[in-house]
Length: 206
Image (cartoon, rainbow, N blue to C red; front, side, top):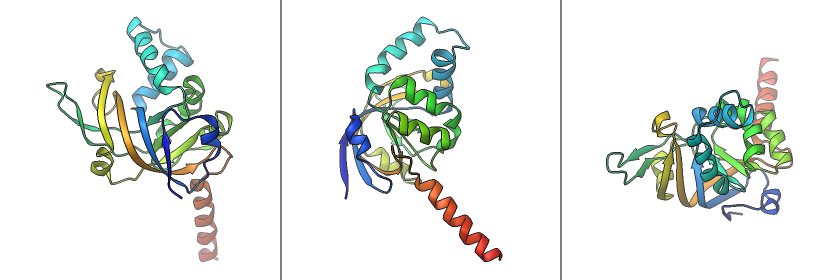
């Protein structure tokens, strides 16, 4: 059954989700890929680099959005860069496993209720989903222009010096279509698909 969820999402709503369920997401979220996850981790979690006042200001702006919220692994194509009247032209998901080294700590630190991307994530993130609780939402790969239609407003941008695809875009979405593929109960559709595929391959080899 198709579910509609508003961001921020509460713990009970997250615990109620199961792998395989289709969800329409509405509310405010941010985009964040490699540079963003590394910046959050190094500046605020491991503190291997010193936080500037700008870093602290950005964090203070993001915390209310991300507590109970979501990070979308997305490197958007954005129009209106010259006029600052930003509009998403394409908003397809990025391969999420690239963030595996950071995601568990980032989920904990920001009190996230989930991440959105494609391809699934590893054991550390799955464990974080059980702890938080949180889920992994799989967005449709190859449908970047279609997903961009769900972005009703670009509220702002931080860390544009990272580059347009790597910056932190604060966006409002309406009925963004996703599928739960890792839930808060330890189930991962990605793991089960790999295991079934491996079993089939082994039978074929025999």
